[in-house]
Each structure stands twice: as C-alpha cells, then as structure tokens.
Length: 171
Image (cartoon, rainbow, N blue to C red; front, side, top):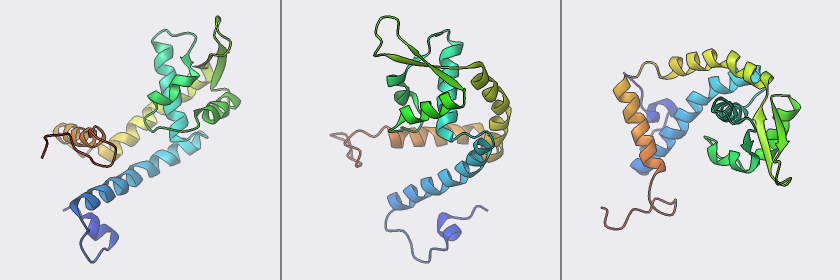
C-alpha cells in the first residue's frame, strides 16, 4: 500500500489543513518526477527549461514556420514560466542548438528558430524522455492519468487573484 506523505517525511503531527497537505504533496511529487528528468537533461548539457524551449521551436518548425518564433512570445509557450528567456536563448545559441534572425520589416523584432543540431538532440532525447515518463507514471491507468491532469488543471485554473479566491456565488 502507498505510504502517505506524512509517513514519507516522518511527520508526527497532522498537517495544519488539507490544503497544506495537498500543496506539500504536489511539491513532493514534483521533486520525485523532476530528479530523473534533471539527470537525463544534464547528460545533454540541458535544463528542463532549455528542453522545453527546443520542443517549442521544433513544433513551430514542423508547422512550417521557417522564420521561427518571435523571441518576445516564447515565454508564453513555456510549461514553467521563466523571467529571463533571453539568457536561455543565448545559451542555446552558444551551443548551436538555436539561432536568431531578424524580421525583414522591423529590425527590432527578433526570431528564434531551431537548428539541425537542435533537431538532432531532440531526436536523441525523444525515446529517452518517453521511457522516463513511462517509468514514473506508467503504473497509473488511463482513467487515473486523466483524473490527475483534470485535478491539476482545476488547481491552475482557479478564478481569482492567485491567492485562492473563488468565483462570486461559489461555495
């Protein structure tokens, strides 16, 4: 039987609230899932954010967007928001995994696109990432995976000021 968070961390007393217990469970799970991911990406001199950016650029490349993605819009597509996407792009440019380009009409607009080398790195990683995800979540049924995603989306899509405020008229 699965051990509770309380058992896993050796907590003698209960949590102050169900919300606290749920939040700490999310943190513990993120740490559990993130360890193997960090180790895998480290082998390729990448972070999870740089991997995410490469996947975004590959998606635009496969959609036929030859010029790439506006540098200013990349942050909106990131799974985990980052305050300094420019530095991340700079690092990937140095590694020759992405390149920058100018807009033909407006030199202030910069585009970022994936290179052949970047596509090759993703090709190498695809199967390894798929296996890692399966190793961590493959024991859950399809119904459980859908329910997990639904609950996590529900948490993120709260209506309010980000402090747990509820919609007017809700209980």
